[in-house]
Image 1 (tube, rainbow, N blue to C red):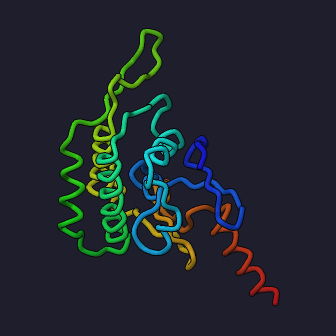
Image 2 (cartoon, one colour):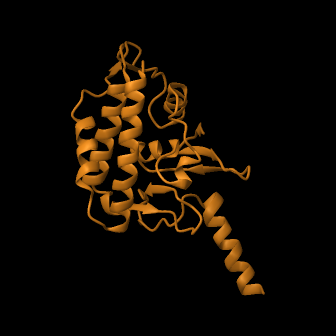
Length: 197
């Protein structure tokens, strides 16, 4: 994963690199793995370095280097796994799981990361950033997404073999694919072959 102008550049297991814009910070967290056979193949939150690598690549402004304990890492994994269920339920128009909501809301209730403006007008992070502050920031982003104007635009990629979730923040609201560079293009190729066969 590497930071791009909008979204992240992902490397698929088949070697293809493609740009993916999850539309929300909390949905970028789902790229770190999760429950289930598909997401668990990409697990990086089994060590603190995996979380810190994700922090460097995600849409958070650069320069954040939180101190993260093993207990905080476990809490991030717990919230991420709860968020998988909540985002899927939202995308499918299903009822939100009360247990997952309790996990998310408990994390959101903690103090978040604090951003500062330096004398030269640039942004910096307040000293003493922790995994708990990072988790609270992620959880609050999820609360905003689930209750905000894009709540009904949380979507699963339209490809049958893709598990990526995203918030469609486009003006028309008709995004179907995780990425036109990957799943959208593969769909167009299949349609073209079907028409010309």
